[in-house]
Image 1 (cartoon, rainbow, N blue to C red):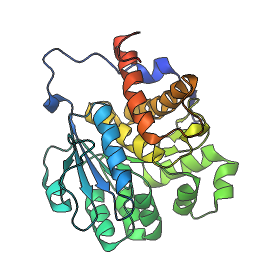
Image 2: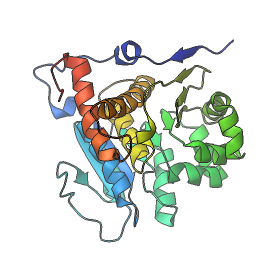
Image 3: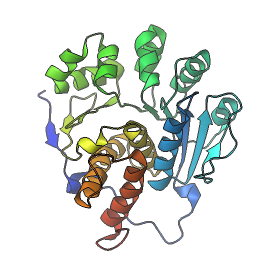
Image 4: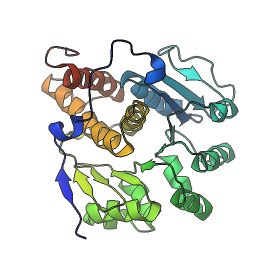
Amino acid sequence: MEAITHLLNQQFVTAPLKPRPLDCHKGMLGSVGIIGGAATMTGAALLAGRAALKCGAGRVYITLLIDDAPNLDLQQPELMLRSPTQLFELKQLSTLVIGPGLGQTGAALHCLQQALVSHTPLVLDADALNLIAAHSALAESLQHRTAASILTPHPAEAARLLGCNTDVVQQDRVSAALALAQRFRSIVVLKGAGSICALPELNWFINPTGNPGLSSAGMGDVLSGMIAALIAQQLSPQQATLLAVYLHGAAADKLVQQGIGPIGLTASEVIDESRQVLNGWIYGAGVGQN
């Protein structure tokens, strides 16, 4: 069967959104777990957590893979910090992000092994993808997962997973994304200008939002947290991925329209603007807007 192709648009990606009921509580909005933030890269996991929180997850738990990890994020005290053991013991996780600032230590490898055999939807980014590319047993675990998996590689990470060089990926980004989706039975976001979202059934989508301001540290971590937050709020993994990718770029576009960036645009600014845009889409003009 020929692949179905789509250019993402606001009407399509926002179709699953609806206002919250008046009796809403945090238990209805899901729980996100995030594992990463190794030494020198702690901010990556915190950015993913802040993005998940501000895109509506009811609870966000973070595991930082550093010695003497703090018990509190002073900038965002709503985030709950846990050890790896404590995180994997949580029964109510709606989805788990692993990879932002993860590193490739033994502790990182062990956490990834546990995540891959879990029955929780996974968002895999950064060093989680690099570890999978380097260890065939991890790749096999990913291929045999029954819960949803979302991979968010940049071109170099995609090339490692496919065993080719980055030029091959960039020459045919759609084919590369589809190959990853089929190989790992996963939803794939191949990041870059015109990010490609590919599904294992050969459907693929091109995202038209975003600008060069997204070419800075932490933007991918933010996207991972956004995807997880939307899954936690009961969107399907496909709906959550497509909406998050479109929203991520739309927030950056709106900031540039306001004169913020593209040069010097930061991941933290995109987090806050994503919340504004998302509320505007759900509740209408004038709500959640600057």
